[in-house]
Length: 185
Image (cartoon, rainbow, N blue to C red; front, side, top):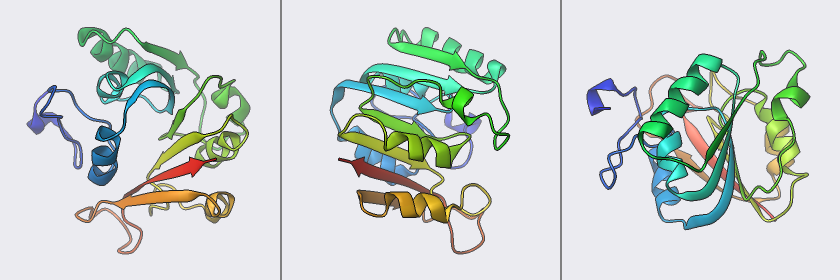
């Protein structure tokens, strides 16, 4: 994939040529500094960044609602020799009361990435998992995507890093694209 084929905010890692996850650049820079080689990562929402992320962790579990998108992402992983990825296709509509089906059972999780449907429910569920846990939520309190005071309330007592993408223009002028990292201990 080339830079011309990417959407706003996406980028290619110059070290390995793989498309990075579609998070704010500050968050991606932070992830690059982490050693997750012994970490199991669960991610809600598949994408072309799956291959990049799989190269950084012990095992990557990905839950995706769209079968075609899960297939495209899994082919990208296979083409990049990523043998530590499991995909779970869980077709459902967001906000239709199917969160228990969508979340399924998460086991052995060190990092939980929240980048698709049922974001509040993913956050609430993360608080029931073994600790310590790193919770990453993309589009955190972002206009037109995920504005949830209840999620802020759930996570208010946890240490966090919030990375805002300053050049993001598709917003209400206040709530720009942000990726949040919460440390659940």
